[in-house]
Length: 315
Ligand code: UDP
Ligand code: MG
Image 1 (cartoon, rainbow, N blue to C red):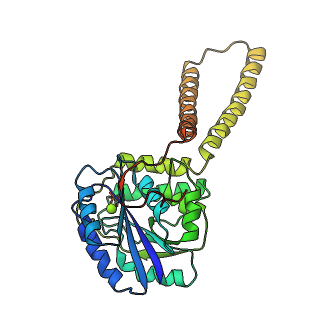
Image 2 (image 1 turned 60 degrees about the vertical axis):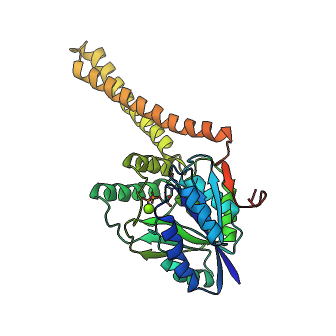
Image 3 (image 1 turned 90 degrees about the horizontal axis):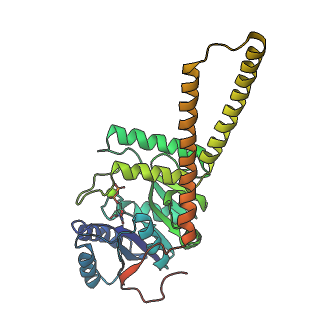
């Protein structure tokens, strides 16, 4: 019998978690040829998620959990879950039923056909504001162009993968994780399926627009040095232009004497160059900050409680 691990990051999900497990169990019951196990990762929730998880684990014997010492973020929670799975196929999914377990049969079909991964993308995101939608479209376009990561528009983390692919993902042990990029970067044959997203039934989405913006910057800087190259190219262009301008001014001065001083030209040059320099330093800083954080080599997460045996995690 093939085994399947469901990795589920949970942050402040006390309201919906039981509902999630019950709904998912309904789908699992229709797939008797597979043995499912949950790996619930409590990402330092501030509500009673941990207690709910413990209660669920006492009720169902296929529920394993890891509970962090604080909030480390969804990426860290996914990593922890992946480290602890040992099934043939592994699914990563959200705890809010926005990733419907109803597509498991479709995913399993793809896996049995020989795909390494069956990933999902959303059809249209209802309930999403125009601004948010436009922003995410722009982000997909920019990041696909700038990085090696090629994701279709609307790609989601929700996917089923082989153990082999999970092992490859675990090899990428960087602290600043950007899963959508990592999933794509490791390669493997992926089938994309589409489904209509639904609104969160219970609890609240923990994403603010500012964190989405951060997420977009991470998506680009984690996988590409194009912004750095951009500053170099801008510098070169401005250098060449100013060379031309210097030569023209020199010739003018030599042959026609000193002209009236240009207040506007000077002001524009100072402001333009100042702005550009600041921006370039900012981009540099973004990368240096990343190098700094990576060199610390800190753990991606810290476990406080777990019902796994001590040495279950993959190195
Ligand atoms: N999540 C997490 N840590 C966080 C934020 C979110 O583990 O710091 C989990 C959350 O419990 C949910 C999933 O990540 O299972 C997606 O979160 P959410 O529904 O808030 O995001 P959205 O669906 O809006 O992308
Ligand atoms: Mg959600």
